[in-house]
Image 1: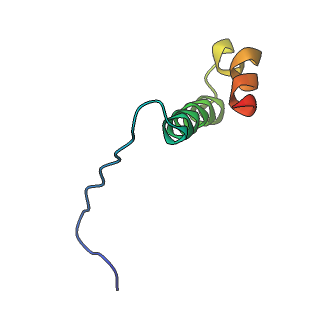
Image 2: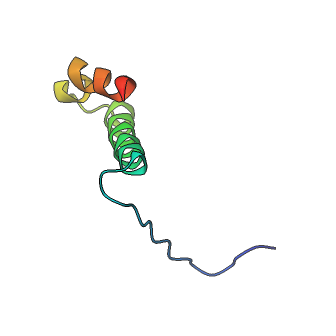
Length: 57
């Protein structure tokens, strides 16, 4: 049931669009989650300015 072989996915995103901002926001959140969950002692990961920019956009 479903695809049994590897699938290649290409994401085509146009510059200067809302979609581009969403993709960047997702990337930033994923990076932050990886840092927090891995237990890295990285003060930059919880930078208040970065967190604010994630919720403001």
